[in-house]
Each structure stands twice: as C-alpha cells, then as structure tokens.
Length: 112
Image (cartoon, rainbow, N blue to C red; front, side, top):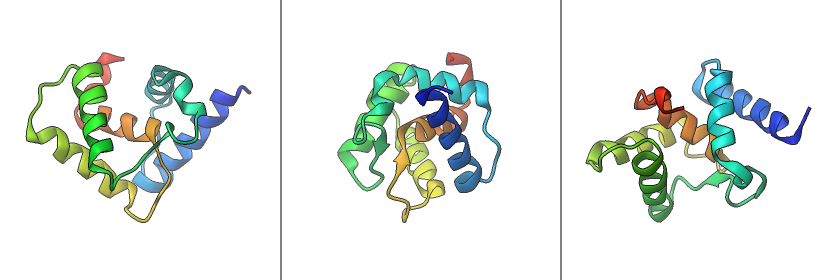
C-alpha cells in the first residue's frame, strides 16, 4: 500500500472512532487526493479547532472556493459543529477528515 492509502485508512478509522459512522471510502479518497501533498506535511495536514484564523481559512478556501458555497453564518456554524463532534480534547484533527465531514454536513458530495 502507498503512503496515501495508509493515511486514508487512518482517516477512515478516525471517522469511525470520533463520529461513529463508517467512512464513504470513495468520497474520503477523493477528498484526500484533493488535498494534494499537504496531507504529508505534519502542520498542514491538521486543523486547529481553537484557531479562529485557521477556521476562517477552512471556510474561505474549502467551503467557498472548493465547494462553491456562498458566505453566510451557516458556514462557520457547520465548521464548529464538525469540530465539536471531532472532540475538543482531540488535538490531532486531520484536515482530510474535517473536509470530508464538512462535505457530508453540507451535502456537497456531488462536487467530487
């Protein structure tokens, strides 16, 4: 298995453990591929749930640019919901998992 496949497996485990649902492996793979080489960078591969600036970046670069959503308070509410479900005590929030869950939360699977 490739390093990316190993990471996708790890992300699927995280989804099962933290969100209590099986991962849609096809969607998870597409989201992970969409993140490109950032998944291999320790810092870039994680999302800090307590950093407002980082959450704003997720909103602008992922929800608005990638998923084509319009700016509204619902976007940040969705991000906060996913972060809460992921667990505030969990410091290692994988970007691929966060993006996957946001994609599902907003019903934007068709973008992939």
